[in-house]
Image: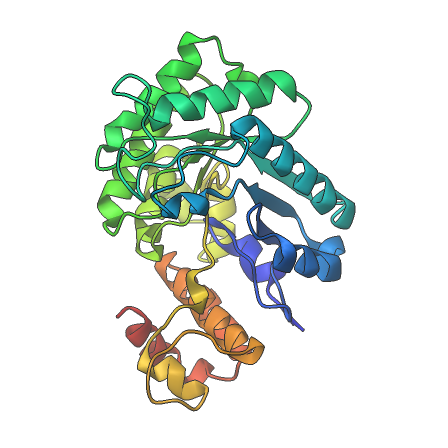
Length: 334
C-alpha cells in the first residue's frame, strides 16, 4: 500500500478523487451514478478516510436526450442520501458531504432549460431548497450553477438563494458546479472569483468546491486563495520566521477553503510516463498497476502546480522515479 495521507494534507488545495485500490488518499469522491468502485475503496480504507463527497451523478446529462434525473431531483436526492448512509457506515470517522442534485449547462448548453425564465440555474436552486427543507439534518454540499460561457451568471444562483431567505449560516460548503467542461482555466478562475464575492455578501466564511475542472486551473486557485484568505499577520513579517513551506502556509493563511475533484488521472498522459510502464505510445490505464503509476504522476503534477516541488519529488519516490523529477514534470505539462 502507498500512503499519501500526509501529502494530501499539505497541499494548499484540497483534492478529492477515487484512487487506485492500493493507494491511500484521505479525500474521496463517490459517484451516485456508479458507486460500486468507490464503496469497495471505502470498505478497504474507511477508517483512514477524512472526508467524502457523494456526487449526484450529473454525467447522465452527457446524453442530450436526458432532460432530468430518473424520477426527478427529489428522487435523486433520496438516492444521494441513501448512498451517503452507506458511505457513513464504512467511514465512521469521516465527514460525508451530500451534493444537492443540480442541472449543468456545459454538456449541452441550454439543453436543460425549460424556458428563458426557468433555466438550469432555477432548476438547481429549486432542488437545493427541496433538499434543505425536507432533509435539514443532512450534510449538504450546496450546488451553485451558472450559464455556460457566462461566469458572472453564478451570481444568479446566489441571488435566488438570498431572495428566498436561504439559511446561508447553516451551510458551510458550496460548489461552483459549472467547471468540468471548460478548457480555459481563466474562465473557471473568473467564475470562482465571482462566486467568492457573492458568497461573502451572505456569510463571512465558507468552503468552495469545484467539480472536475482541468488541473491547469490549480495555480489560479492557489493565487485566489492567497489573495482572499490571508490572515491578519502581514506577509512580510510572516515570511521572515520560516522558510518551511508547511509552516509558511500555516502562519500565512486562515485555512485552505478551496477544493477540487477529478478522476481524470486514468486518461492518456505523456510518452515519458507511458515508458515507465514499458510502452511507447500514450494510452489510458489498462490495469490496476498502471492506475497506480498514472495516479502518482497526476498527484505529482498537482503538487507542482500548487508550487510544492518538494511534495512532487516525495510523491514520485513511491514509484522510484524521483531521479526523473524535473524531466517528468516538464513532460507532464504537455
